Image 1 (cartoon, one colour):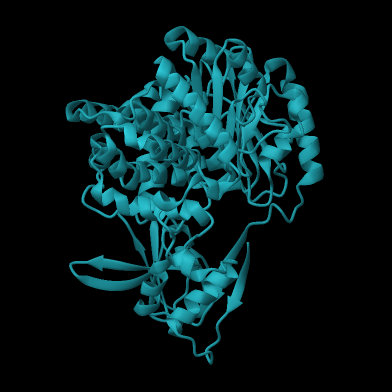
Image 2 (cartoon, helix red, strand yellow; image 1 turned 180 degrees about the horizontal axis):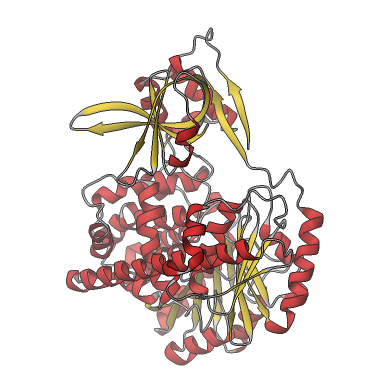
Amino acid sequence: MKIFYKNEIKTQDNLTNKEIVNFLLKSRHIDNLNEFLNPPSPFDLPLKDFGPYEKSFRKVLKVLKEIKEKDQMIVVYTDYDADGITGGAVLWETLYLLGFKVMPYVPHRRLEGYGFSKKGIDNVKKQFNPALIISVDHGITKVEEIKYASSLGIKIIVTDHHLKGEVLPKKAEAIFHIPALSGSGVAYFFAKEIFKHFKSKTTKLSLLTFNFNVDYLALAAIGTVADLVSLTGPSRSVVKYGLEAFKKIKRVGLKQIIKESGIENKDITPYDIGFIIAPRINAIGRLEHAIDALRLLCTTDIKRAEKLARHIGLTNKDRQDLVEKSVYEARLAIYKKAKQANFFSATCVDDFKNTPDFLTLAGNKNLSASDKSPKIIILVSECWHEGIIGLIASKIAEEFYRPVLVLTKTDDHYKGSARSIPSFHITEFLRSLKKYLIDVGGHKQAAGFTLDKKQLDAFIKNTNKLAEKLISDEDLERKIEADLKIPLEKINLSLVKSLENLQPFGIGNPKPTFYSEGILTGAQLLGKSGAHLKLFVDGLELIGFNMADQFKELVKGQKIKVVYNLEIDRWNGRERLKGILISY
């Protein structure tokens, strides 16, 4: 593993905390420091700030006025992940409170698949017979499906943020494609524009005004963090103000999620969203039908909210168990067939913790050291649940530091999910193989795709061939880039408090990372099973989670190089500086 650092502060450099913070921001190419530290409220940002949408929005208003006059139905057709569900809740509820005849629709992951499908459009037509469908978090690549809806006499408006295809859906009435936002972010600003136009005619003015300043902001923040959108520009505004809004939310469903997950009465952070709240919203869509997640976010009945939140919590536990089992099966396939370059065929095991290989794999947590590993890992299963294949791909990509494709069989097709490394654009890669695929869509580091089972062998063969050509050995070498090399004597509580002004941290604005050299003055194991490591380097306490296997290598008094984040441990009115160890 190589360690790089963007800038260095030397012992003789005499910089104030403010100067160090500005130094960090400039190295991240943030020129307007004041706007970054004090972003405008999303409530004050108009849709026109994101592009030339005035003409398209005038068309939207014309369509909405006609529909309202004729008392026709609108369907808000959302994606089934946390970004789509939160954005769908915002847009559906806005239209409902403005007096429109509107229903939400969430496709079934297994039966209808991602985004628009002819089957999904037929279901919407049969159930609701709408005059208009508005997409949330999908639609930008669904040219044929939107053409099909148009042939049925249904108007389509697209709101999306995903990578657009070579051809835009021309049959759509209007397209609001904003890559700088999440799907829920696009829905928030689109719905807010509708609200501002129709607010003079609603009896729900105070409620909607509150929602756009509080509840809807919290929902948009969940979607933004969950979908790994860069926390810069307007998305930073959404998350910064959305996190603050959690303190004032009135939404009983969201309150019940927080209560059920054990993070009540605390300041909500991006970590809480990404690892506690969003996985619960996602779990229902992965294993069952995501409409229950949307119902939970929109209900005003506390008893129903309690029941749904409890069910979602249990479903999330089932999801965790299923992922653990499936990741074991994926690792076992790689472990047993590591010398086969084409793909790894995973065998499903019922009681996996009692198999002979379990202890071997559990004791060998890093199988990725072999230089013989293929440049792209392809895992194929006949029985993995399609709702979790993205999570399997994510876990394997993190461990093996390679692009990973995970495919599972569904009827006559294979559903696939891909995760990648920072240097490799997985969606563009898969689109270059589109002649083998039914559809594909996604982002730089994550994608979903479908292929006919007859194309599997050709797809795998050509995927490996293209990966060998495009992915270099340097791409596959793990790298850590610290923001700053800094002497340990310059680290203090005051500096870390100054760094807290850069929050919220996340994709595009990660926690500042430091690289320092010093003397190891102490080391010990932590946790009930001794899984964690605590180091003292020149007096600075550093916690290394799940690093206990490196304890035996340490010798007190040795020179040591550490990469770490800094935070303040606040307890009982006391403040204590500590570091979170990334590598040494």
